[in-house]
Length: 398
Image (cartoon, rainbow, N blue to C red; front, top):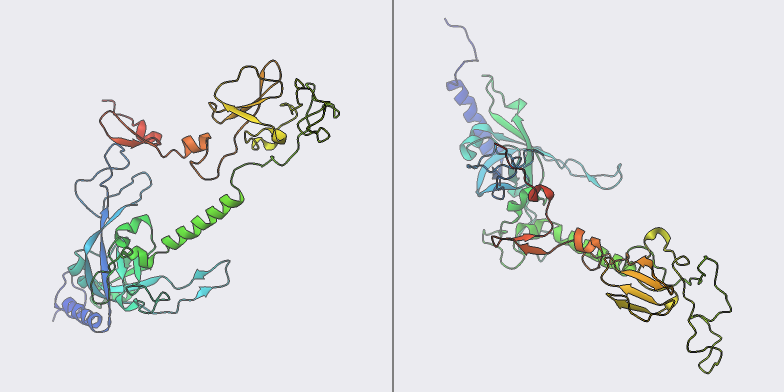
């Protein structure tokens, strides 16, 4: 009589018996699970010039988009949806109020599926990157009653392994257990959120906002909030730096001492229109460079102190009087000069600029926030602002 042993080197009738019973348990008591199969990294934009971002001839889950950071930022998913059965423990989702802020507890699911059923449906095991939809978790009563479709619940697989409870007496595994977290609107899952939303009857949602992103993502609301904050910030602080236009600047002599207070200046209030004390050739006293120093170096706005007139020009005018101000527009940033009788002395640079990118006339607007394009020799339109790694591509030295 041969020895009794549940273990056999090959998967025989005993294994099939246990596997069919487990499959039947999932068929009867499991919930429906829709799988969006991860096909691999989308390397269509990789031109092969960067060795760390190769272009693959075939689509595979084993391809890596960025070899330097080991990331698959752009992912491709199968347009078909695969159905199978799964089991997981349902638990209450509560906010953790013991930490600073609002943190959800128990928002991670551990879903168990039948291994052979999974392989027969997908052609492989569930892996990191697969997206799972739980149809029984659809929200048919959202707060926004005008939504055209029920809110679906998506999770993304983070890890997978054999379930400990899935080993039969034959020592062969029958179950696959995956760790899933809620799906977020990020670059990796763009193709999922770009899909057209479906109604309960299976028809497509029509209209402008008919994508899954429009129903599930908070991107639009976050963008509106961010725009409102920026608009209010620009209203309260239209320009960077310090506003010194309301300050009175005392005129000074060439040696830095205060000018004679009895001497008439643009701020003199004791001289009327009929006064004969001021002659036509009298020169008003204006603050010189030494007496008008911008605090912190971020107060330059190209405006003369005490409300004196400024002549904008691209060259110094001839016949200027002592104390005249000229704003040179051909300087970047624009530069304010004052004539002292012999030379044009720099007063300040107009470094105060709009807090909105691209709306000013400084290097921040024309260089850092450069949005212009140009056409190269072969007729290709390219962005003026490019990374050095794209412009200066090293070539192989054979």
